[in-house]
Amino acid sequence: MRTEAQFEEQYAVPRDSHWQKQITCRKHLRKRTILFADDNSELRELTRILLQKNGYSILTAGTGAETLRLFREKCNIVDLIIIDVFLPDSNGRQVMDNVRKINSSVKILFTSGYNKDDLENRYALKIPGHILQKPFELKQLLGEIRDILDQPVFSE
Image (tube, rainbow, N blue to C red; front, side, top):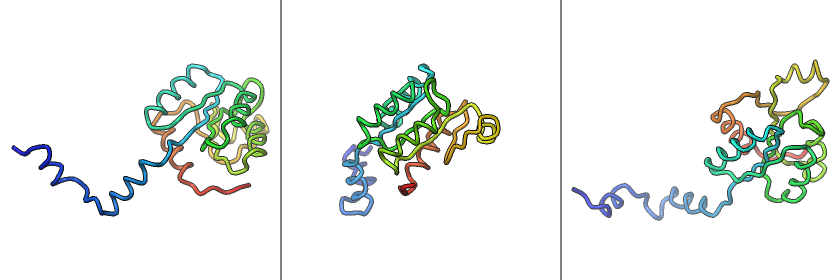
């Protein structure tokens, strides 16, 4: 039977390898921060818990005004805003327009119970970029987050 030290010696990544350097560098990277805005408090709390368990730092908001306030306070650490298209005091597009005045390159993922065509045709609401249709699964949400965060940053 092998000892733990023998096992680690056989399967450990060599210290001078490319992979060890990447692992060491990743340890020093900060967690990605997501600002999640939805008027459904249960969905906000569940999403916060699940995203934190998947390694993200989460800020939550229930209104457009609260989203803007949090973004103004934390704009230097927010990597992505996930926002419901319809909030009690505004729509996600209005919030996005105001957020972009503060930081034009912030990444945004919209969520909605409506698909993009319905939003444009029934509500005359043009939503740029990604829309994640509700209800969504955690796997879908995590995939969208990874795809968006991996994209290069462009200012509009």
